[in-house]
Length: 486
Image 1 (cartoon, rainbow, N blue to C red):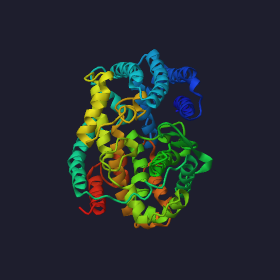
Image 2 (image 1 turned 135 degrees about the vertical axis):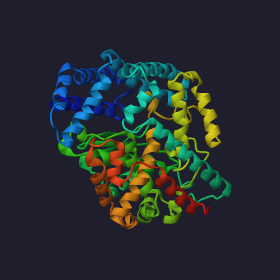
Image 3 (image 1 turned 60 degrees about the horizontal axis):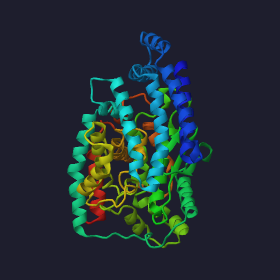
């Protein structure tokens, strides 16, 4: 663990450099930042895959270990084995290209110029495929990439969950569309809302959620994200002058990520037991706070006066609740999507993502493929690439990552049901603004375990059963059936 802690601390430092690049670094700093991050990734790779680490792992595995030490060794072993066949030069080259590509993506999005990003995307795909084939040449590269974010949830199980959601969500959205019901939109015509107003609103919701000023901060970035650890977890949001609810839900979503980081055991910093388990579990925390707290009636009964005060509106709690849960099948932007169509955005991305990684789609063809699938799944075609294929930052970082958003939503519903069983009237706690018990429950049942358990074991520890889509389907059918009088 002494060897591993040095690796973890270097990676944590690299995370701060990444945050700085997205938030405060001047645009001209990208070439140097790429070199800095590449040097750090190369150094951590050398330490992780060294003969000394291999010997230490062999020795540890020959001992009788308690459950926590065994979990630490299991996780270090997994990382060591996955990385030991990777050339250090490839690790550094990929890191540098990731850093560079994020700047290229941002400029391409701002200019609505996918052609300037396409060559970078092709290079990234080649490097990622090379990496996956070095890790395991006997399996599809996409599956190897998927396991970077979801090491313990088989891709076959993920596919089953997607099929279950398609069967439930597509007819539900069709039923909602057929009603012709137009829910209230009390904030739509009172804008525009300036950044300062929306920032003040974001700060107030973070205060309600008990986000600690001494261990976190709020900033703005091109794409909202969270970075940090149990001592320092930073979130970003973005502001649309015509859509204050988008910034509000993004802020709450990123708070959910930060709550996981901040709930990890402090005494385990630098160990796998002090790290989050997977992308899907991380997303369960953000989706819980966004959907099962901030999109509920009790939340708006508590918070609507604050929103009206900031925005100069006069919405009722019921109108605000309806507005934030309005289903917009023709919405183009994933991070602004409603709770139902959001998952069609994710399914679309996963299909495009996989076809690109596997070589069935060329980078130059991605805008057309994207637009065709938007029309197929959502009945709308983007007018620009900035609203379409360029809207997400993810491809400038890694592939096979979008599944985690839907996995997280499914797990969030399951955790919410278990929390209600344990805490009783959770709605009353939300209505009263007493949200600390919710965070404490998540910390006790999810955060404090770090990487002690594989995914299904963690879910079973928290909820009493393995991951299932049943709770999510029941939740959305009940909620939106009520909203749209189905």
